Length: 93
Image (cartoon, rainbow, N blue to C red):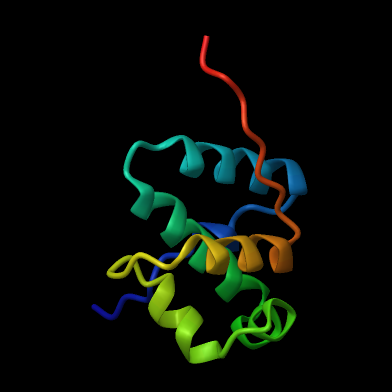
């Protein structure tokens, strides 16, 4: 049986659903979860388009968000801005 890679963003339709998914990904103690989620969202939006908006080479985005590397914070910030995602800090109670 042939399978294709799973991308949850193929099933998330509204901004609210995407926001909830990304909130959960960023809340996970394993930082790779958030990085993989960013990569999946970038693929859904079009990696070339995101790379151009972030001012980064497309190939480096594929590598950075593959789950096997740890991109720098500046790369993460550029990609989140290109995707229209805002990161917020909140003190833990």
